[in-house]
Amino acid sequence: MITWYYIITARPRGAERILIMNEYLQQLLDGKIDFEGQKLVEQIVKITLISSTIFSFLLGFALQSLQVTFGIFALSVIVLCLVVLPHWPVYNRHPVQWLPVKDKKTT
Image (cartoon, rainbow, N blue to C red):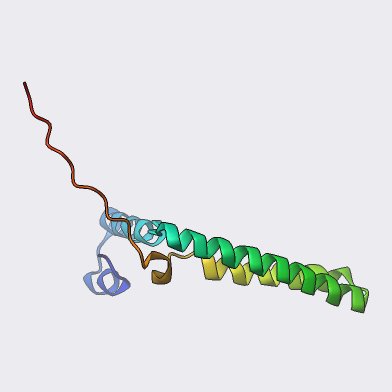
């Protein structure tokens, strides 16, 4: 696994540095999430979006301001993205155990 420490201390040059950064970014973006994690994320998203919609509407209505309504809703969506988009370890507590590959017999 490539870390920032390796990138800084090894000081690769040119194309090697680009390849290392590409591999590091690929590791960050490859989300490993199991089915239970997907279910948890779906519940978090539903509850957060519904509650933030109601809260932002009520507060915006009370203050008579669309700017407050959309500002609070946008802030809640940004926070929600920070919570559910990265592949946190909590979303991979029940990894799928795949069956072993069967050898094909040649006849």
